[in-house]
Image 1 (cartoon, rainbow, N blue to C red):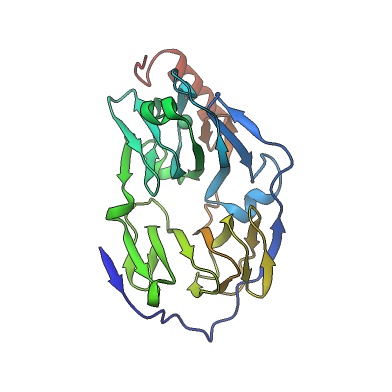
Image 2 (image 1 turned 60 degrees about the vertical axis):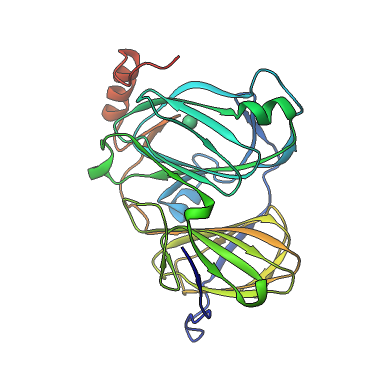
Length: 302
Ligand code: MN
C-alpha cells in the first residue's frame, strides 16, 4: 500500500522533550558469531522506565564478516514472555523455530516474533549471503508483553518491505515505512499487543518531516545513518535520542541523507523478572520457564 499525502501533523502541539542523547555504547558484544551488536539499553540501568514496553535494542552497524561456507549466527536458544523484532538494513537473516516455521529477512523486511508461552529458534546469516559476504546491518528490538498476553501461542509476522504501509514525502525527498502503529492515517503492518509505533524513516539531505507521538508514550530515535536536527538538537549517526513523556511533536530536519528508526509505545507498568531470554513478571514464573525449557516443553529444534 503506497499513499501520497501531505504531511499534515499538527505543528501547534508542544515539542516532545528530549531527555538525553545517548552515544553509541563503547563496547560491542557478539551474539553467537554472526551479530556484532551495540546494546543501547543496558540491563539494570534506570533507562528501563524510559523505554518500556521496549526491553532491549541491539544494533549491528554495517560490518562485513567476510565470506563463510558455514553461516554465522546464533544457534538454538529459547525465548519466553515477550517479542523479538528483527529489522534488516543490509544482508539477510534466515531463521528456523521449534514450531516448524522458517523464513528469510531481507533488507527492508521485518520479522516480528511473538515468543509468548515459549519457543526455540535459531538465527543465521542467509546461506547465499554468507557465502559471498558483504555489508551486514541489523536491528533487534525486544518488546515486552503485558502480563495478560505473556502466554499467548508463539507466532510470527513476516513483514516484507514492499507490503508495508508507506508514506512518501513530496518530490522523492524520503519515505516512512510504517512497521507498526499509525502515521498520517496509514496503518502499520504489525499487530501488536500494546500501542506501539515503529517507523523506518528515510530522508534525503535537507528534507524535513514531523511526527506526533502521544505525550504518554515512551519514545526514542536511533540514528542508523546520517545526521539530523531533532527538535532543534543536532544528532549524529549512531546516537540514540531518548525522549521524556512530555510534549508530542517531533520535528526532524535531515542534515545528510538519513536512515532513522523511530520507536514509541505506552509503557507497561508491571514488574519485570528477567533472566536472559525469559522475561516474566515474577521469579516463580522464571523458574517455571526454566523447568519448561529443560523438560523440552518448548519443542525440538536441531
Ligand atoms: Mn533469538
